[in-house]
Image (cartoon, rainbow, N blue to C red; front, side, top):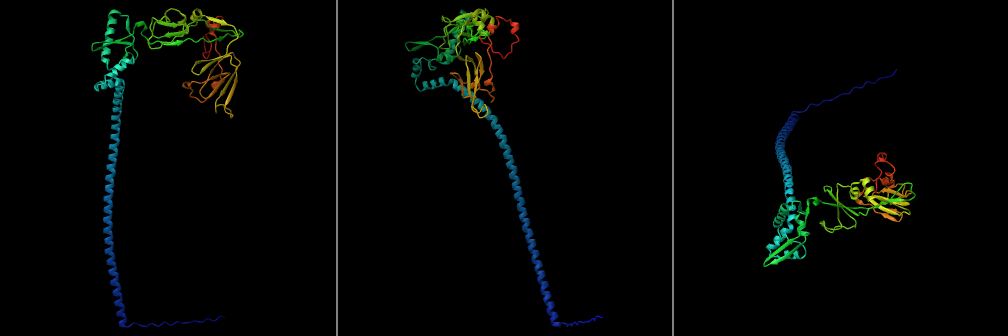
Length: 410
């Protein structure tokens, strides 16, 4: 059997004396007094901190109010600035229009104004110098005087020659181009100006067209080609005029005025069939009957003709070589086309810097450049059609259904 030992612990208590109790009570009172003072001081500090926080909060509220007022003021200023700018733009647009009109007026009147200023400075010699150089001075002949003189001439024509009229009403022509003579009597200088007049049938702006004869090969004729037989070199045409003018000597006008008495001019009635009317209006029947064609024997010649823009007619050309950087792909910049037709038509664009046509070089016109970067058209070949030859063997009804892509040359 196991034995168990039971132990007892004895505690001894000693009671405090009266003095020790009084001393402990005194100590506790001092601790209580210290705690109370600490609590009172803490309360004072908390109230002071709260008061300071309230003051700071009030200050922040004032700052926020100031920022709000500032933001409102800035928004108002921004709105006023935008509105002012919009008004200023409208005002500026109107001012620009006024300034542009004023500049246009000043530009048109600058010569006269400069001469008036020269007159005020006592430099009247400038007008005489202009006369000596072959132009009428605004200083010596003001616009108003010239207008009155032209109106007087027109009134005289309306009364005596009602079918005649002034060729020019533009004052710049008389100041810069019109011929004139001068003479002086005592202290007066007289100007006699050559004022061109014309009939109402010629009072139009005419355009000059050069007649370029091209050889067009005939099919199945072993190299024979036809060409216009007319000797007309120039046709003078105005859409609203009832007449045509033709020339045969390649003359060109040197000024804007051409005298109708010139023997090189041949006037034609536009209502009557003529070779010139057939050429200018594209009437094939009149061209064949009145201009006529000649058939020429081989050998044929080699040539390159610009038809219009960048469209060229190639005659008896064997090879076309195009050098176009970065256009053909496959790291090649050159394309060579072997031509087997006697006459071919090609339209080039501006992507090629060198175009060789046998011994000829073609320079494209930059004003006719294509907008597309695709140059597939340079290898497309068209062929001219000799309608003058075909209409001898086929009726108009038989040729009516020809495709519109076929070019016609005479």
